[in-house]
View 1 (cartoon, rainbow, N blue to C red):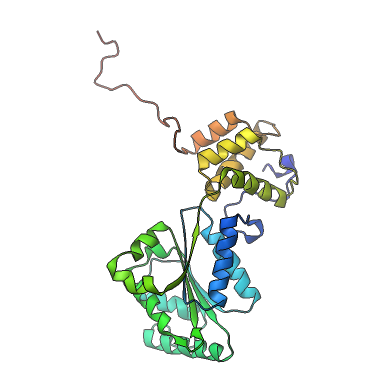
View 2 (view 1 turned 180 degrees about the horizontal axis):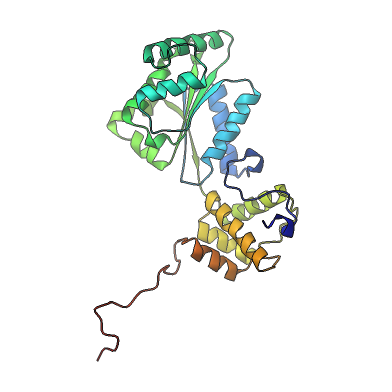
Length: 290
């Protein structure tokens, strides 16, 4: 809606995890490098964690692009609210296993044959599980057992567990100690610093056609960082709404007043923010106390 007004060729703050818009902060670049290293080095179990909106799904999309470009088969479990039977059905579907997909035994035999065939060619296979913090114990135990599929060269299937910090806490429980001990590599994403927030916004605008970022003055950039606490998803939401508001007001630059309006409408809360809802007078208190 505002693209032509700002001379943009695409939406710079789309919420979809588009790898072409990836901004590689030091932490994100390190996380992606570790994911690729973990798979290619056959670490077996790799864990990626981060708060909501810090870019885990984008990291997984970049990993999928890498695996595809290197002809490495992978499965992608995107719905973690699964029973063990549903988990094996999704594995069979993703790897196109020619077997009775409703039978755990047949799926395991067929998967093992696929992995052996690839291992004999010195090739590996990956299984990516998103939102893993939601997995029930029974499903996580089945995933752990996949780690038994190995040969002398290492694990035949590389499992990437991605989730919110609750996944770390879950694996600290005694029931999960065997899986916890098998994790060969851990990657953590953190929110952006103030400088990274400014670079992130400029990077996305440049990819969308604005080579010189001039829509957000320095004071606005600092406030965006403060109010979003450096969370990429919130930065996208606020920045998108700011451009829309500036467009509606026929202004080429966003202002603090516009940001106040946007964050108020979004009911955004942050440390030190003013109360979002004004106090109301008690219904039992007289309007004019004596």
